[in-house]
Image 1 (tube, helix red, strand yellow):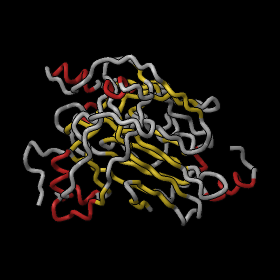
Image 2 (cartoon, rainbow, N blue to C red; image 1 turned 180 degrees about the vertical axis):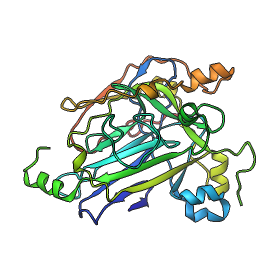
Image 3 (cartoon, rainbow, N blue to C red; image 1 turned 135 degrees about the vertical axis):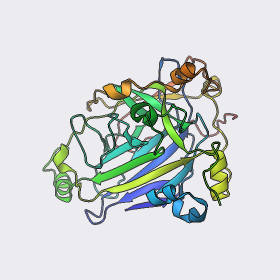
Image 4 (cartoon, one colour; image 1 turned 180 degrees about the horizontal axis):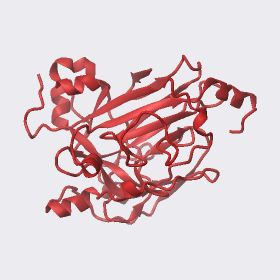
Length: 337
């Protein structure tokens, strides 16, 4: 089951094991320049607010209600990253296999969404090995940042690969490790009134933005350890600021600072590595995606404000400690939006 608590998706599988628990947050962040250069990891600027769709049933179109889940606000051209926490409710963090899709397109392979796990190529992340995901895995060690764009204008990964603006949003499914395999790990036997009718009120999807240095790690356990009989699924609908206010009655968060404002304030970017883990190769399918900036040029549009290239001087190196990792700018340092 999935519980929404403090803007966090808390995934619990007590039917598998009392310790089978993980969580996912959706972090606001800087949108890195979409200029063909490879950038370090931007910081987390706080969680996007999440709300139960069912709480606003009378204001929603039928399709949104049918798929259920939660709703999250994003400004056009705003970026996000997903923060994973395997949790420490037991002697070891409980491993999970997590699939992530945008518009029902797998963010690791570019294939159409299927619930089951696949290894050739690997279409899922492994927790706790994978601390976060910032974008589409296009090459080994490189992702293209998740950037929110309106559906129907040709920018999103869904539209580029499937030719239709049908789903939008984010989709996740999480599978816990089988109980017996976790127990073996513990014992040391195993190493390791609102209707969307106006064309201006369209749903939002995620599109590929700038290039970022980030590895997606191979599954160190093997496919047979995952309990695929007990999945937890959630659809995350992305609303623009006007939709969010109309549906929830709340104001969305203020727009984040630009990457240039943040960098010029002397605040850090991040470099994460795990010397013991192997990275997947990246998707040839996703590598063919055109970035938001590239698509905009083809359309004669300028979709990304503040897209100038940057020279990043302050980089903080993070190493895998199997503890919860934090990517936030230092307390007390404020960047004007």
